[in-house]
Structures are given as C-alpha cells and as structure tokens.
Image (cartoon, rainbow, N blue to C red; front, side, top):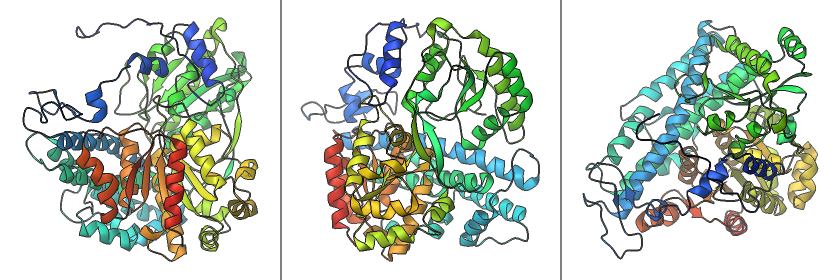
Length: 614
C-alpha cells in the first residue's frame, strides 16, 4: 500500500430510504448494510457534501500553481492564479472529460480492428466474417473496392486505422460519407467538422493545457469536434465491426434482473465487449466443462450478460451466488475487488491495457479468446464449492425484454426498411423519435429518470430507442417488451402492434452507440427532410461520465435537442452554459437542455418535437 494512503474502514453509515425503483436492488443494499459492505450508494453518501467548487466547474488543477478555485457566486476573486476565468476553467474540464470518454471508445475500436484484421489475415479461428452484406454496404458508401470479402475487410480496416492515426487537416472521411449533407454544411461553416482522431486528440490536449488556448468557446468547440469524431469514427468502428464480424441480429427475447442468478448454477457474470462475451458464453456450453460443473455439484453453467446496468455491478457479488465476475474497461468500479474479498467471487479482468489491483488479469485477444474463455469457465467451476452459504441471497426479480437488433435486424423487423416509422411520423401517428442513452448515477434514484421519461414519451406517441445502461433501465422496468405497448399512445400502438415490437426498442450496449445515429439518418432520409428539421431528440437522464458527454455533444452537433438529467459541471460558467443551451441552436439547430426533473424534461422534449412536426 502506498505511504500516501491508509485503508479506510467500513464507516457504517446506513442507507436511508430507497435507492432504486428496481426490485432486489434495495434488498441487496440492505444486505450490504448488515454485512458491513460499502456499495456505490454508501460511498456516494460518504462524499456528502460534495465540493461546491468542483460541482459548479470552477476548480482548476491544470498546473501546479493550483489547485485554483473561483467563487461560484461571483463575490470573491474571479480568476485562477494564471488569470483563467470561470468559463475557461469549466471549458478545459469539459474538454478533458470528453477526451477521457473518447479514449475509452477508441480502445474499444482498436480491439475490434485488431479482431477484424486477424479475420482478414486468417490468423484467428475464433472469429469470422459473418455479415458480408453489411461489409459491402459500408464499403460501397466509402468507395472501397476489392475482389474478395476478406480483401474488402482488410481495406476497410486500413482506411479506419488511417483515419484514427491521421494528424493532417483533411476532414474525417466517415463524417463526409455518412452524415447528412445539411449537418456537414453547418459543421464546415462553423469550424466543427472533425479531422483524423489523432489530430483531434492532440488538439484537445493542446487546447486544455495551461497557457495555450484561452478562449472558452474555442475550447468547447474542440470538445464538440472530438465528440463528433467519436460518434463517426471510434464508436462507429465498434458498431460496424460488431455487425460485420458477429452477424445480423433480429429483435429477440431476453431476461433482465438479478433474479436470473440461480443458486443451482455455476454463475459467471460478465461486463465485457460483445466480441468477447460471446466466446465466454460458447465456452460455458462445452460438453466437457458442463460435465465438470455437474461433478462439482451444479446443475449447469450460467453466463450472465448484464442482468442490470452499471451501477448494479457490485450487487451480483453481494448475492453470494457469483463464482466469477469478468470485466474489461466499461465503467468498472475498482471497489468490486474489495467487495469480492468478503465473499467467494473471483474478479477477472480481460482488458489488454487496463489493470485492476487484486483481480486476476487474463488478457483476451482475437487469437486466444477461445482458450481464455475456457480458463475463465474452469475457474468458475472450481470456485463453486467455495460459496459461503450464510451469505447467500436469492434475488427474485426477472423482467423479460426484447433484445437489441442490429441495424439490418431493425430494418427487417419493420418489414425491410425504416420507412414505416417515417410514414407514421408523416401521418401524425408518431410525434417523433427520441434516443435514450448511457449511464446511471447515484445522484438520482436508480432508473427513476430513465423510466419516467420513457413512459411519458411513449404515452404521447413518441418512438423511443435506448442504448447502454438506459436500455437496461427500460428492460428492468418492463418498457422494452411488446406486452407494455398498452401503455403507449394510440398512434404509437398503431405503428408497433403490426410488428410485435415494444414501445421502447433496445439498440445495444453503449460501445455501439453509433447505431442510434444510423437509425436516425435512415428515418430522416425516408422523411425526405433535412436531418436538422426532423423531429428527433436525445436524452441522457442519469449520465455520469465522458463517454456519455461525448454522445450528448455529438447529438447536439447534429442539430438535435440533447437533454441531460444530472447537472454538468458548468453551473458557474455562464458563457459556456449560454453557448451550449442557446448559441448552439443558431449554429447547428441543436441545444443542450439541463433538467433534472424527468417530468419537466419530458414536457420540454415533447414541445420540441411539436415544433419539428413534419
């Protein structure tokens, strides 16, 4: 242990009231109380009251003359030591936040590119090219030609790698080729069109450094350019490669909720990219390993691909029923290792770069994925006998939901194209489309805002798509199954009942968030209107990190109303808030809406869609 740190004992501050609207969550938090375990809700409570300078965006740590703080109410001195204003301090922090998020998205893209390259070169047997149709669709748009599918894949990988590594001034190729023309024109006119990702990362670090770019709006524009490069290159790459390598998926049937965890099974809980999650699931079906599990006394092997969203990640350990938890880099709480010490759960991290002290590091690559997956399953089977029977809690909540389709799977679900959605909007049956995305946050009651915004929108004939933790929120609360269509307005029912689809349609994990953009592009094209005139909006009701803020900004850049439900750290930076909430509307047609109340937020979104009525 570092000499600068001391181990913090359990403080024993019990959680009062309910932290979640989702069954089993509150019960497991109470169990943690009794067993002297700190969950994320406990640790958040220990932080209260949080630093007012940090909350309002006027704490600067960009050089060692600081940390500097500025009076958020304007009474004290109004600059840092170097003279940085509240707007400049907040803009630098916003840019850093986005850069951290995009770096994570880039790591995911690099993993997918490495996998695709291995497939193209024939150096892996674990993966293959399962969707040549989607590959052809993407490469046709990009103008890539080749004689064979593997050559086509290799050229696509080469182009994407070039765009990631490029530091020259040419515009980002994928943005020019995929984004609607009216949006690109606004970006070109207002210095928002991104270049290669390496160039945007370099400038992000350059501009946020002390003593370089001192114009807060210039710094925020860099955050927006970097965010666009995320949506149109980093997250774009993960999205398309998932579809190309893993194949098309139609909407299916799935189950969410901690009640999925059954005591009779060897339980492996995973929070990793789909490209690796699938390999662990396949390994668990290996007849030899299944027989090994039965000899250990289990009925079978269950690989649980998030039964809930990220804020729930500690709870499967607290059930006492999880043999192994497998993680990579997706919003992983380092404290899961400390919690696992109190039970029998082993934590395995498979990310080739990120480390997690106290966890078992088993880097997974395209070449060794199948072998590592089997080792993980063996580890879980061997650990089954180590359960602490006096600490077992059997969750009961299970909610069925419609599993996410790929883009082509969604087209097929609507009869071959997204034209039925556009036609419903033109008829007035559907008022518009809203995409819910990203995180959960202990600052608000778990899943409360996601659920209530989605519910209010579908009641008012708005078609809702959901990604990431938001997708799991609507799955857990029952809004992502066809049976819930009865809660929707008559117009939305009329559209979705034909296709047996739910009122909120899941579109996948957040590393594939560009799928929402693809869907919106196609609907706008079918509507026959400029993208910025279409009745679209986005909402991140419980956002908490840079990956989410990147998406918030690239939706904003697309001319969409982009809502956030937890307050970003710009409250003491009036110039930045003015720019994002008002001036951006003059630039792209989009605006940021900051509204913690989900019911107020829903009304604002509905009024916006009414103004955009076709």
